[in-house]
Length: 164
Image 1 (cartoon, one colour):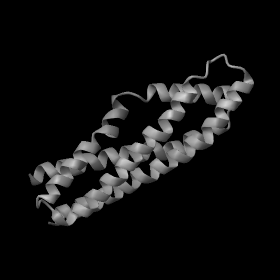
Image 2: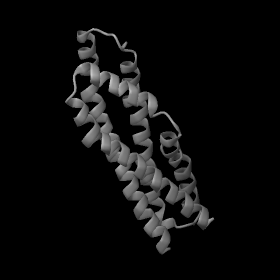
Image 3: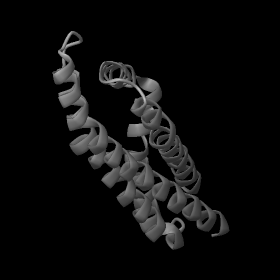
């Protein structure tokens, strides 16, 4: 069971790292770069990004840590590295909140932006961008911080797990 817990913690840390990296890259590179484009380029770029990101390279590291963190929590509660339990729970809580932010904040904004037709008027594109850009970027930063927090707590849990 200790090996299973180690694998669950490592895979969860890897997923958290990949998500933190992705969302941080959007916060400090992608969104500032897109901010320099006109409304049509911004809307079309985000529509394209939001469509292509739904693939296995994104979904596996985004979804897999959730059940693995639950498994690691159960194993820690059963006496496998009990000193790491509170850190694993903290990682799970941060990951769940980040997951919920994605589902309740960023995804609805993505879906609303996706409804803007490619031949929309300049006014419509400007309105769509105004309704999307700042809110999406703010919530993206929140989930970047939460995934980074999840990663940090997982790394500490791994340390404690290894020391046990």
